Image 1 (cartoon, rainbow, N blue to C red):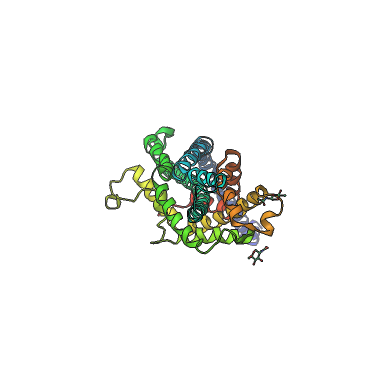
Image 2 (cartoon, rainbow, N blue to C red):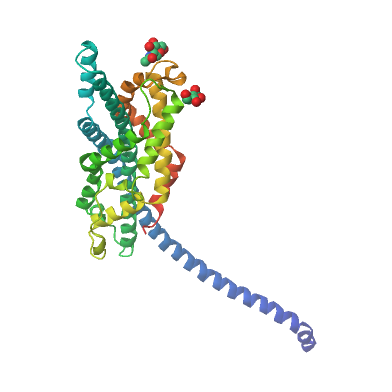
Amino acid sequence: MREEFWRRHKRKLYVTLGVCGSGYLLYKLYDARTRRLSDLQKQFADEKENEELIKAQIQAHFESVQRIADSTTLPHVMDLLDTRLAENLDLTHSTERLIQGKGQPNTLSTTEKLELWDRLKILSFTKMVSSLWSMTMLSLYIRVQVNILGRHLYIDTARGLGSSHLLDEAELIDKNDEQQFLACVDYLSNYGLVSLISDTEAVTSEVLTGKQLRDFFNVSVLHDTIVHILDTLMSMGSPNRWVGYLMPEDAGDYKISHATKFELLMRETRAVLSSAEFSNIVDISLRTVVSELLKDLSFHCGENNLSSGMPLAKLVPRIAQTSQLLLQESNRNRYIQIIRSIPEVELFFTLLYSSTPT
Ligand SMILES: *[C@@H]1O[C@H](CO)[C@@H](O)[C@H](O)[C@H]1NC(C)=O
Ligand SMILES: *[C@@H]1O[C@H](CO)[C@@H](O)[C@H](O)[C@H]1NC(C)=O
């Protein structure tokens, strides 16, 4: 009877035992896994907390560099540019002589008067274009510097993560290198401006050849003239020759292996400025600033004067004053803000911060 039972239920029993057994095994496995998982999760959480802390440190440092650049560096850089432009392109002499000549009809011969006017015409455009170019470039250049610094900080910290101690902020990048690097933004005002002005003057005089003082200039003619000068200036000489207005020639190419941090930062900046992507945002930024400046200029010329067209002779004194329009504190902040919010410019800097250096 019993044997009969066993025989009948053997299969069922094995199956049941089997299920229970594997159930137990599964349970054991599950338990071990969850225990390991929670260990892992804890370990991961600790690492993550560490990483978050470091990320927050980097973010805070990056933001502080950005804030210093915006609040201190930028105004200082623009003021210096304004001063240097005024020193290097002083139009008062020509203007005063013309005014004197107007008051006393016989002090200037017709030829002298025409020469003075021609000079004033070229210098006024030169001053407008040099101011526009410098203001736009410096605002972009400072952001390139800040983003390169920020990225280096990130990379240095990520490397330091392996040694698993929180790095002191000061260890991350040498303060000296950082300051020396940021100070290079004044290269344009202190050294590059002289060549920028003389090149702009040469280009302007070529572009304005044949433009008479009685010719009528409306917004679109003026727009095309400025863009023509800018385009010629940017394509002058060897490719990216204009980078030379912004930073010194790279003399340390051969010593890549023991280059200082400062040299590495400078080399990277040069690579960014010489890239096709940067040229593209420079182009977009310059055009945007030209359009915005023309709106301001139209306003200063009086209602509808510039849209219907006015003689170049009447326009020249206004053109001479555009550098004030561009570099006056409240205005330049507006222009800088406009450049900053161009979508292509925003995208460029986001990518610059997150890409690895080449
Ligand atoms: C501006 O002037 C040019 C040349 O005088 C003319 O061809 C053009 O139609 C004018 N544009 C506007 C918007 O008035
Ligand atoms: C511009 O237009 C205003 C009127 O809105 C007029 O009074 C002024 O003389 C014009 N300026 C020039 C430079 O033509």
